[in-house]
Image 1 (cartoon, rainbow, N blue to C red):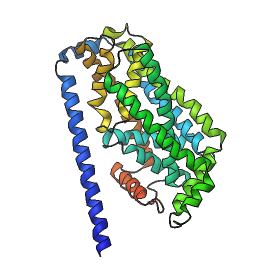
Image 2: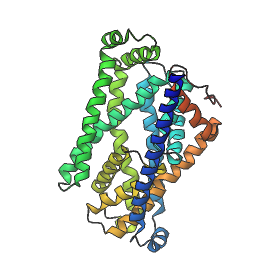
Image 3: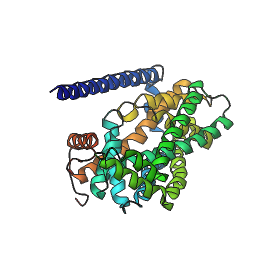
Image 4: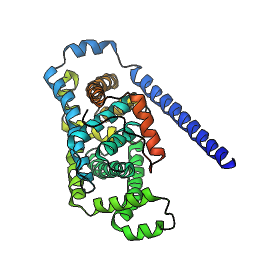
Length: 351
């Protein structure tokens, strides 16, 4: 009885912490949005939109979607040593996850996409989650390289970006070290867990991570992570060209903006990253002496051009999957809370 009460108390405390975190994040995002809208000269945006160069807008929107096909290929490469995974299934899982990120707080789409991938490929959820973590480590390593390049090209970077870079680097080193132990020292890791035989799913995780760590696909996935990051510059550059007041900006401002947006994405944000995305875009453009009001209006346009195609693509992917988002989220959360007994699959990948 006491154990049950203790578990219930912990569960209630976790739910309260989650709610408070969501409230705090939404308040911060709302504050960012208010700051962006205030003094933006929003009335001018309609006139500027009427003079957009639409072929460049199309390039921006389409390239912002296609970059995730590259991510899907990388994800399939990572999981290949454990089990062959269809790039098509990876793509659909990613787009459903992106759709969830636009609607749900705390980047719940990451769990959703891993849940779908695990169910469709019949790979343990713990392994799929670990593969997503490896993706983030690869992204973080290359992002640090891009940050270094940005610092070299822009000596006067905001202090919060410099501090954020150091924090990100420290986190990457710690997490990468723990994963390396599991991947390259399987026997020692399993010996350390031998007294906890009830943790059978951890043994499976360590064994599968060992397969990933000793496969050439791991290094291939690391190498293709750099193009994946750089491809995210194209939607920003294309929209610069489409937006007459900023058509003079070249690849460097687009690159720096991408780096700052990616660094900001490390921190949990409100659904759709609305507010924080805009504020970070403005901060990036101010580094290149873009007028503040103009930078604010562009941030709104960029958010729309990047977000709407992902919403449409994600909605189609979810419709093909044949489940409601609330149901999918429930299954995913149930599976992550009990990794040894994943929740039943909500849909077949062949639907």
